[in-house]
Image (cartoon, rainbow, N blue to C red):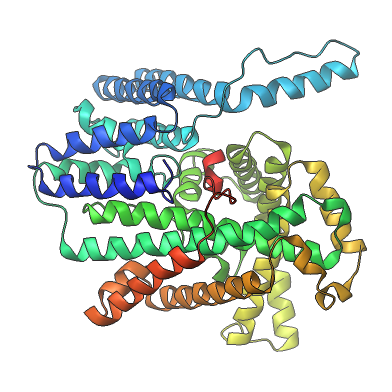
Length: 494
């Protein structure tokens, strides 16, 4: 069930309406039933997998909590991690593993190994696995006590707004709020209005911006051998826009849907393309995942506590694993490695940058300097996105080769860009919607609040004018219909 679909348009008002009307003790049960129905709408068979993850991590945390020695705690934690990551490996990485083993075997003229299984990747498995595993680690570290109520814990793992693509919630945040549902009325007029605004904004990002620019991006990336420098640049910039509008759109809908019911999910995007360095970018992009890797991978590896060389190794390993998390393909690993190298080079070159600024008389506090940092960061991030979007490493390299060797500036003036799926009208709509996105991003950046909270603080008339404009824009300018495959959100594949 997609957020941008008629079934969800029917499902959510029913779920939220009954949730607001039901007694406090029934609310969590209703949310759990709704969450499992939501997940089963994708593929009812895979509900067994999320139930397995829930049961295993629930028992693991209880065993850790009851253990009186550190060795036993470690043993039970390892038991839970191995079972959950084995399940993730089987469904997401087993085919990738066999393909690489077969390549090695072919070098020695041996028979390749065929995958005897043919499973679709269960939607959301990477997200709810990381959420559940993070809970077990939190219990092991004694950051939280193990949850005794299976119902409450099952709702924590399966809460439908963020189930299939995040944010990857922390037990301290979401579990505590689930506990409060029994005690008090979590919903309020403020949260309902703010949440509704977030949902509309998320739908605008997905249907008007992301799905429109995807037509252009898909056309360019599927014709790597025919493109020149201009098309390659447009494709890279277009995908940078698409993946942000798509994933930030999903996160906004998820946060808004939860907020309508009085539950606050963690922030997942904070104007990432306003970042002044790649490190800053990762403080603003997919925040729930980047902080997960920081807390459960980078810091346990030693973080920056064991010297500079070890720090760089830890950074690179963390980003390589992050790349692999995104997809079972070497181009994702390379994408993660590039970001790791960006971070390492950024740290190494700090003295060089400082000396250069001093020599050139550049003032770091000026607007021009900051804009320069933002532009350079976005160029670096956009270049890395090529490996993320390309179907393979080979195609990514071809794309980059054409980017730097097939100069065709005339493509900006001879209307050849119209051959990639968007006519003048569609390009105008796209550019105007991007302008709206930039304005909203500036407001969020300056005010330090999301668009939902900003709209709630405005007067009633202004707020509803904006709501109506967004609704009309989604209906009139959204990409959908019989001949358009709006389809799933990009991060459903991860």
